[in-house]
Image (cartoon, rainbow, N blue to C red; front, side):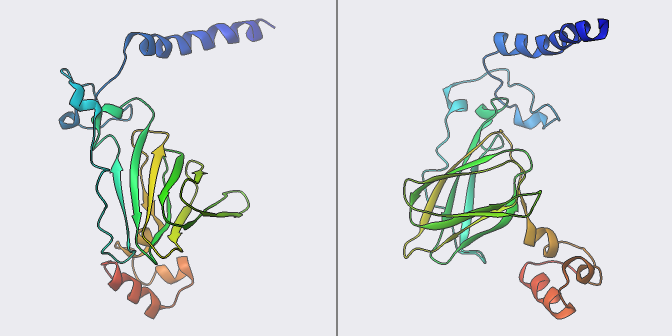
Length: 212
């Protein structure tokens, strides 16, 4: 009984420091040269309005690549004002026939808003490997829960443009096909991991600049 009564008191002491920090500090613009830490970037000493402004999403990204798609991020590295605020953004450009391949953001939930074109977007649950897929048109939104594998591809006749919001200042990114083939995993190990034959593995490694 005594332990049960002490629990709310202990929790209040754990929560108070964070509440106090939130009340006494409006923001913490990232001091990028000092480097990232597990708690985020240290705060910049002198800030201006420019720290809370970013125009990097105004122009289309270059889709001249193997995926015919590109992501232009506005995370803490590009937009220091979002440090500590639990939010960041991005722009995604997908050419006709292009794809944003299977990938994950380990540190954030993602919300996409289609501003142009028609795409298919989907994510895969971790418990049952169920695929949740929707066709999205201009004005539609979809959410991908944090850490879950997801993808998008353009099924329209015009380029597609997405605006993206993340629930963290540095969402992270791991693209599955690059994680497998654009690195130095030994080629004799990959058949065990993927069930692909040696010829297929060498083809993908060559395409993605992996090493043998």
